[in-house]
Length: 435
Image 1 (cartoon, rainbow, N blue to C red):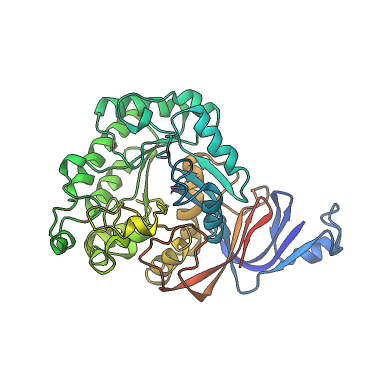
Image 2: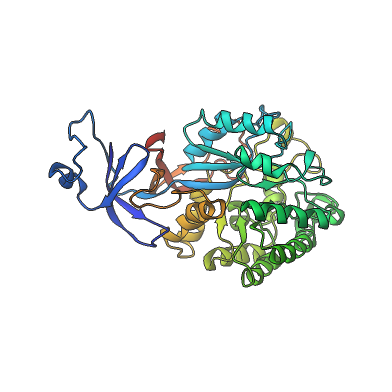
């Protein structure tokens, strides 16, 4: 058994915060309360022996204890692109960042549109110290032409469905896919960028594109598809996730759609609420991503959406690329940055320190809300009977971003001093990462 003593616990389910102990038996939380060691000695937990060999104690004095973080949007590049990342190194990066559950995207090679590839991903994920879930593709080959056998893929473990990386342009296919995922009661997640409106992806059509003398990606590319798909989602009552929001208009569209359907969800990435398009001028391809970094007004709108719950999840869109790929010219380099190891620090600094978000609310955006959307039972909160997935954080300590567990290092935050250090990540009652 494992006893975590004197940690400052923030539970998103109850909204409560305070110094308490957590007693873990096996993979479950046995109890949450004050002075549990005395209760153990007095025999309240009769099966527990107090000998050092059977009771491990972690002194969490001065540390914050949150439910293990859950990332609904990650790319581990496995199979097919393992020179960038693989499931083993990706899981290590996740654990180092405080994540106990990740949901992988389907744009691998081969695509996760078949039983064999999905089985490979899930089986390899089981060899890691965290929980590796995976979406399957909406369409075969991510071509947007024919819907996959969703029912079969779900039966063997697909957590949800997405063609992330490639927008779905066929409106009727989107409608049918939403109807099928609704019957399965699983999320369908959308990368909302209309390629017909984009000249050069990854760079905002504004001062950043002007700096590079290219056309860039206008906000209308995101807005137009979000507007279309929210309408269909409301009509079908589908569980829909609008991925990596970048535009202020998108935030407002989601705010209005949520008044009509409780099944509308949205995610924001730390880079979209901490950086603007000026970062692309400063860092070049290391700040190139889809959708692109936009303006300060957009950044502030995303923060406001996170504060009021319009945007209910924080996701990393962890997207590893090799140095050789990112060293290419701005129009040739791939879009995306890694994010698992910097996500909590960025969110803590921007949302808690600067904007007054409570730790319980931050834990909701990074743990409980993602667990609820995906129906991950007993995850994302701290109470008796919940899974013992926890992260211990020193919110007063700083660290220099770098020395990543990920295979890749493509991030504009490398070398920056960040606040909040992950001290321990515990998954299934076992230590998955320790500083």
